[in-house]
Length: 204
Image (tube, rainbow, N blue to C red; front, top):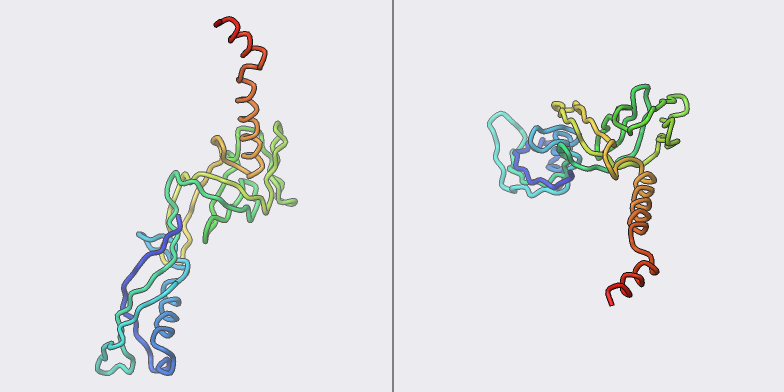
């Protein structure tokens, strides 16, 4: 899930940035250090949002820069097991599809798409279901559940596995069909007006 995390660090402002405002210099340094990195506790650090910098700072003998304590906010994404996520297919392979969720791609294996015989057509960028006729293609948006998470280290993106083999998961149009079908089934279970009237007469 996405969240905003508050972190604390000490940044070194080099002499080359002394002409820049302290806050802007600190944010630029934090961006270079943290953005696109992975933290075991925070997950994917997407971007630095804001920072409060201690203006006093400290100097170290033999170093021309100044060191400042900084408290900053970062937008993060931590994929959690069993979490429901929305994503877009960005690539079709022989073994499934890669789905963009947040800042990274998750693997949707063919065996986790649906209970049907599937064919992956890499050339046309499409996955075809033999019995239902349903399809997935590059650009399709879908809802899935996270089933496996292995976070990488530093700039490594790690691995995430997802599934659509559960009710109300899969492509958006599939879910709409299931909801519509569920409503039709519920309506068919309701007694007709004639049946209701017959019951009322019998009760009298």
